[in-house]
Each structure stands twice: as C-alpha cells, then as structure tokens.
Amino acid sequence: MRKHLTFAAQSIVSIGLLTLLFRRLDLSALKTLYVTMPIWFYLLSLGVVMAGQVLYAWRWRQLLWASGVSVTMATAVQQYFIGIFLNNFFPSTVGGDMAKVYYLGRQHGYRPVAASIVLDRLLSVGLLAVLATTMYWVAPDPSPQFAATRAVITAMAVVLIVILVLAARGTGGLPERLTRFGAHVVAFAERAQRFRRDMAAAARRPRIVAQSAAVVTTYFFALTAVYRLFLSINTTAHPAFLTLLTAVTTASLLSNLPVSVNGLGLREQLHALLLQPLGVPREAAVAISLLIFAHLLVSSLLGLVFWLRLPALPDAVASESGI
Image (cartoon, rainbow, N blue to C red; front, side, top):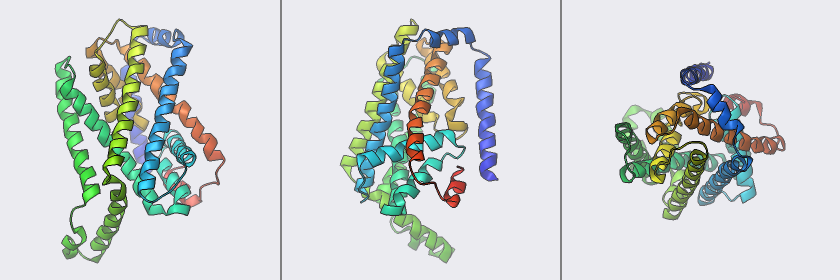
C-alpha cells in the first residue's frame, strides 16, 4: 500500500509540474523544434546517450570485479540495460536493481552484487554532485539564480562525499556502540557492517574511484556538447561551455530527487529554470530535456530484449520490485 501511495503522489507531482510548464509554453514552437530536427542530430544524440549507458555498465562491471564478482562485459551490459528498462517502465524505482541482484546473485552471491549496485548509485550521484559543484566555482556565473543553486549543490556534494567515505572506511565499531539498545539493534548493525565491508572492497580503491569519475565526466562533457549543438541549430543562444555544463549537471542531479515519476516534470522545469538565464528559450530548454529522456527510454528498450531472453523472476521478487 505504501508503494502504491508513493507512486500516486509522484504521479500527481509529475502531472502538476508538467501542467504548469506547458501552460507557459508555445506548443507550436515546441512542435517545430522536433519537426525540423535534422535526422543526423537525432541519431548522434541517441548514440551519445546509448554509449553513455554502456560506459556506466562498464563502470559497474569494475565495481563487481573489485567486489570479487567476475562477470563478462556482455553480462554487465545486459544486466545494466535490464535494470534501466525496469526502472523506466515499472512503478518501482528499485525494480531494476532487485532484478540485477536476483539474476547475478544466484551465481555470485546476493550481498556482494547488492553492495556493488548501492555503491554504483552512490558514485553516480556523488561524483555528479562533485562535478556540478566544481563547475559552479570555476564557470562564469550568469545570474543570481546560479549563486543560490550553488549553495544547495555544494551541500549535496559534501553530504554525498561523507557517505562515500563512510562506505569506504566505516564508523569504527558501530555494533559495539549500540549494545545498550538490545540484541536486535546490534544484529541489524552487524548486518549493515558486513554490507558496508562489501562496498568498501571497491570504494577503497583509488583506481576504481578515478575510473568512476572519468566515466561521469566523459559522459556529461559529451552530453553538454549535444546540448550546445542543439542550441546552435535551433536558437541564437551561445552559452559558455562550462556554464552550460553547470546547468546540465545540476538538472540531472536534482532530477534524481524522488518527488516525481522518473524525474518527469521536475527535469523539464529544471531545464527551463536553469537554461533561461543563459538566453535559451523555454521551448528549446524543454525540447532538449524531453529529447534526452526519450533517448533513455528508447535505449532502455534494449533491456526489454535482454529481459525477455532470461527466465521469469520468481513471484516474490517480482512483487517486491513492483514488476
């Protein structure tokens, strides 16, 4: 019941944000942006998004190997795209993760696989926050609005870095400090500690963190180049590359907040708010946002193909995942 209520609340937020957004848009201008889009640009932008997902799958494979889970690149890509598909097309935001845990965990152990997935998410969001924060402090600041957002993003980066450090180094004897709360609390702390140690196997390796940072940076630099090309084709706006990168990373980071369905509505509002100070018309900001999201949906359909070739999930796992 709680999952259904959460999904209903997120759906209401998405519908409300989209309604507010589209009431202020010139829909004919928005349609024109898609109708006149060169096919080569569509294919190029789709290729960048799909290549980015493969790059992230490679990064996840590195985490698996560091955790003692040996899988081929083909298996990592297959499982990663299955996860993207399930997360995009089913109401539960963890359905894809649970499917990956089930399919790989049967052979390699559920806990290390789950630990690699949690660490993968932490690194994705944490390193994106660090990149966005860095851009805020080095890129030209076009408006007071960016200065206000900089404080929020910087705080998020600090919190996420602390979480990553705790995952790598631990808290130093947590179960012992909780003995006064009873055996059940101690047992839970011991399980959490074992799970944290599984994450630490990868999180403590500088090479793994450096590779993860390189993946995040490479993808968002390439994605920002796609945004800049789109703006040069369709508008007269020519924002500085690093300033545009700041807006792109911020929109992507804040879209991860679990207040709407897959960030729908929130992501488009963020694009309109963050790109407008750069001289980008609202219609163009929303158009590129929806285009990139559509690319993610199209690329995730590859996960459907992989999923259909695998055995069906057990009823218990499917029910827990919302699938």
